[in-house]
Length: 199
Image (cartoon, rainbow, N blue to C red; front, side, top):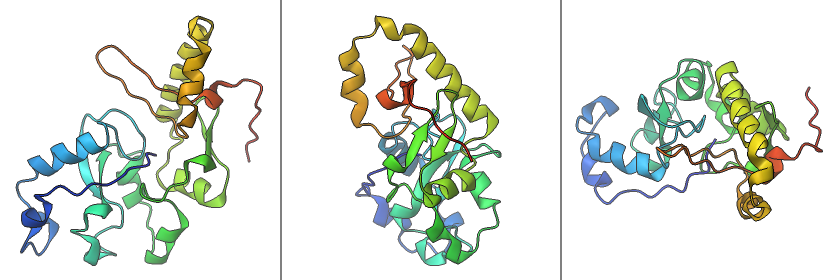
């Protein structure tokens, strides 16, 4: 998951003014553009490059109607049925359960680690619950992260070690893929000497 610093656009209040329900908001293009840039073109939950996507209400509208037009409750998610927002919305969460996992506003990235195989490991109960609710260890995500780590391991001896030190401040598995296949990664993720225990 991403740690996102929300920055409400100047047009947002006028865009949602006098709207009773979310479906009343017809022209969302400017909002989409702003949020996609805010999230660096990545899904807020699985961190993959956005292709098909939608605006997700972290606190679901059926349980938190008062947060429908709260900008801090809106995130761009991929459209996968197997993980991320749509998986969360099918999870059958009760209102009181939303405090048991992290949103992108308050997530503690140091509570998550990654194995060389591509698994995300939660170091606290809240982190583990977050992984579960968004199904962040779905097979497709694990395989993709594993392939990326393997590629970087293959080229590690050719990389300047200072590059790893520079990106050490990143506490999540951030992957930016553009036309040139540029990747950002976490030094600690590729440390083979660290053995992770699985429950």
